Length: 145
View 1 (spheres, rainbow, N blue to C red):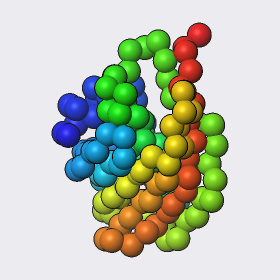
View 2 (tube, helix red, strand yellow):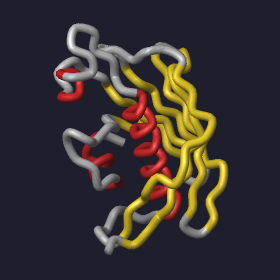
View 3 (cartoon, rainbow, N blue to C red):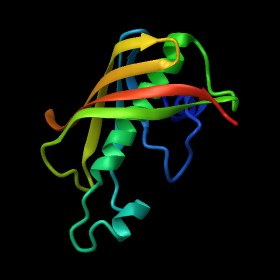
View 4 (cartoon, rainbow, N blue to C red):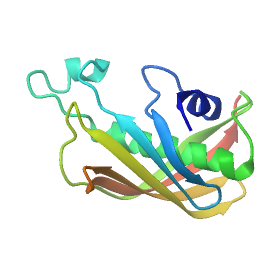
């Protein structure tokens, strides 16, 4: 799935769209997506000047966005402006090494459980085949008020 497909499956836009491409998607099972980390991203002006590091919280957000695409593909729906997926929890989160400008994050997310409007995913973010971050993410689909 190219960027146009990503834009159809996520409500996020620049500068908070954190998925550049989807390499694989098996609805009901797993997704593999890419985030290219570039030095010109706005976050690097303050995190950290002179030693830019991609924030761990944004790695978790990128995994959640990949999970969102997987959920939409699994339910054969797309964002419609009436509902959103919100974080409901992050468990067993670990950061193993810094992510730097020039790195390409490979985001691998699998569905652990889906019940009604609650989804639980296992996500791993990798750079050059090494896990840089991992977590179990829980999201809840809710109507927009």
